[in-house]
Length: 165
Image 1 (spheres, helix red, strand yellow):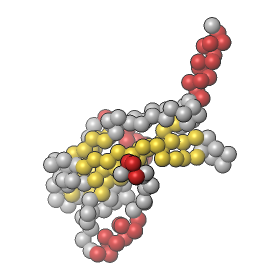
Image 2 (image 1 turned 120 degrees about the vertical axis):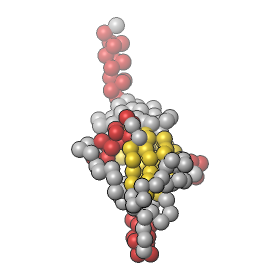
Image 3 (image 1 turned 120 degrees about the horizontal axis):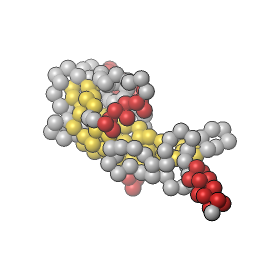
Image 4 (image 1 turned 90 degrees about the vertical axis):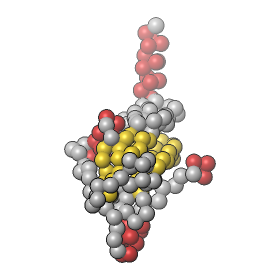
């Protein structure tokens, strides 16, 4: 019986990463508004991407695990990650989600948001807040061609497999 218990504990530990859980958290809730007018931004794209991480010789390695996309509703509200992915491969864990929110002619989240300010826990702290209650995210409108080009240049392209597009 003692060997069984020890074996069970070791198996459970092997499946968990040193930093993140085996299963992702969620759901994440928010409301996207125009930073100037405070009006809701209807139809903004909200993309959440999760990665599978595993220990590696040069540090943890990372690979795509899952992605989910939704649009903000008539109130600018969204919920994403209601059914978060799990990493069921022993020795790996879930990292994320990395959430990006964008709408034409606006600065994108997380780089350009006016509010919310990063809580003490940084981005992970913001995700924890979004799990508890909807967080209002203010995006600034980009007024000049130069602002728009700069914003588009800075967008971090995320490789999402075709079957998830």
